[in-house]
Image (cartoon, rainbow, N blue to C red; front, side, top):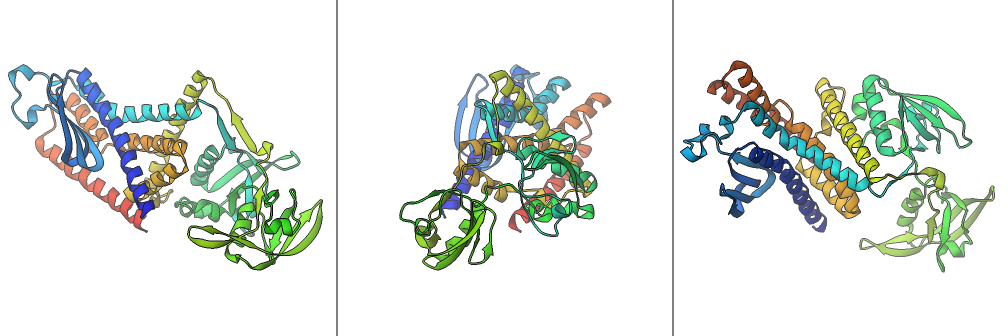
Amino acid sequence: MTDFLIDLLAFIALISILVAVHEYGHYIVGRWSGMKVLRFSIGFGKPIWTRVGGTDQTEYCISAVPLGGYVRFLDSRDGIVEAEDEGRAFDQRPIPARIAVLLAGPAFNFIFAILAYWLLMAGGVTDIRPAVGVVSADSYAAKAGLQYGDKIIAVGDVKTSAWEETLVAMLDEMVDDGRIPMTLESDDGRLRQAVINVADARTQLTEPGALWDGLGLHPWQPPAIVGIVSEGSAAEKADLQPGDQITAIDGEELVLFADLTAIVEPKAGQQVSIDFLRDGYERSVSVILGSQEKDGERVGLLGVRRTAVPEHMISRRSFTPVESLQAAVTKTWSTTAFTVRMLGRMVTGDVSMKNISGPIKIAQIAGDSVERGWRYFVGILAVISISLGVLNLLPVPVLDGGQIVYQVVEGIRGGPMTERAQILGQQIGILALLILMTFAFYNDLT
């Protein structure tokens, strides 16, 4: 129940922030263009809070359904325009002004993303370098010759220093022709080329959560090397020491420290055999595991903590305020371009439609990001703000992009489209959105 409330509140906060940013773009540019604003609403449906203010007596509302919002301008098509407001209706303003108002919503979403990334980059950025973790036997990655610890220097022509840009480059290459060319650096510093070839499996591998298992390649994680031994623990009784590398427990082989936790937790109070390496020599010891409470259950406890991430596996980048702004602009542009490319590839069938997410998935992501800290939440805000900007620019009549098309057609024709054509366009747009929402809810539920 607690997780549900966190997800719900985080979702409402996320959507409300992004909708407010988007609609404020329409609102402020509309006012700058001389239009009269009748209502500014965050959410749909019945208003639960309203304030009237300004010379135009604009209604500012928070409404009951937090799934969007709108700005309502004075429009002569909705009724009679009073003499004192003549020329201030949306449809009475010049076409370039109308297009500017329609563009302002998505533009403010992109500006918000730039500011969010600027905030995240202002103090510098620290990342784990992209490197190969556990490679599954007989997998695409194994056939390409990838090995644990290989650093990924470049994917195709893209130099990589962090996992996010590495993942984007891998998806771009894979979707293009089913091949992922990589430049790798071995532990001894040697550079070599490798190509992961997934052939016709590329669409399936673009499904959410399918890439790493499908490739048989997992991001690098710290190995199962003891960093600290807790006093009085089972590990101390077994004489484990910092620097020992645990290789197996009860014959179950492990590589990563995360594997150690997964094996130990179900064995609370049990006697286990631990195989480890010390100074290059294999050793074995038997010990009774301790226990601790976790999420209301007793779980096994060995009493060791991992070593710090090696310095050579950490990427640190520092920026001046100007450099961080430039980096934020670049990141927003690259994320926008990637989003557009992936949407196009969904249309052609090269990328799985299962990547379309609805409110349930967005709520889960928002809740997880809140639990992980404000930096993660701001990062998610930036990504979804970009997605919202791109989505609204699609030439669908009920979206900003479709309304821009109407204005362009009116400019070319010298007059507005016929009412019948506009109604037909609205019906097509609503149908397209219903199909999109159906996909999103289906993906969320499955």
